Image 1 (tube, rainbow, N blue to C red):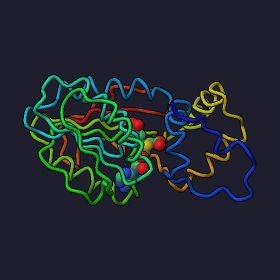
Image 2 (image 1 turned 90 degrees about the vertical axis):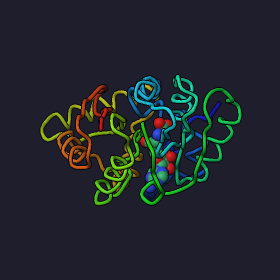
Image 3 (image 1 turned 90 degrees about the horizontal axis):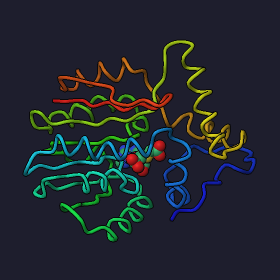
Image 4 (image 1 turned 180 degrees about the vertical axis):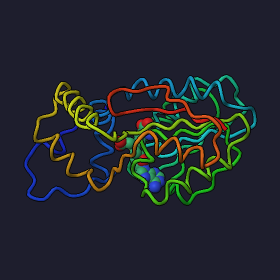
Length: 241
Ligand code: GEK
């Protein structure tokens, strides 16, 4: 059980940039469920997609694994046991909690949790990589290099699952943003919480358009990109090498 997210429910004189610190890790399951439309489906389907693309003797990566939701979804869905799943996150608070969840779960292939920057750590012998709502937090100028390293490390026929909050070119941006805020209100967030969270992530979460994602995935070395899921401005792509 996690605590309820009330981090932004009192007025703050200056809203600091959002960080994945201990306070956020403590409320993370509640925060992401109430903030990201389709989060539960994205996690569950990531397991199903991973099972299809996993190849014997390879690694499956969950980059920016937070508390390990996708790591565990992959572990439970895999049909081959001779794979290793590697969850990587640079927030010690997140990984400490992920370790507790993993300790309660002893079913399926080996899992390693690694505290590291995904832009720096080695990625090798991959059949499946999940980047579930993480690329959006990486500095834009580092994104192509990261995706290129993932593509180079991915075996032929392997896959990347990329879930992101996206931006739109036209008036759809305003409508999708309003629908997302309606979703947050329906989940109990006040207008104050929505607006302070928005200020906190403004400089930290940089969304891009679908065409920017598609072009960069192809440039990185993937041969096919499909959008398999969308709920408002939250989208998940499957990129196949
Ligand atoms: C889930 N995938 O539950 N290196 C490593 N980790 C990073 C980096 C980096 N450079 N930048 C950010 N992170 C998860 C949800 S949350 C999404 C992912 C959200 C980590 C950061 O510490 C955090 O745990 C995660 O990426 C983003 O399916 O909070 O909207």
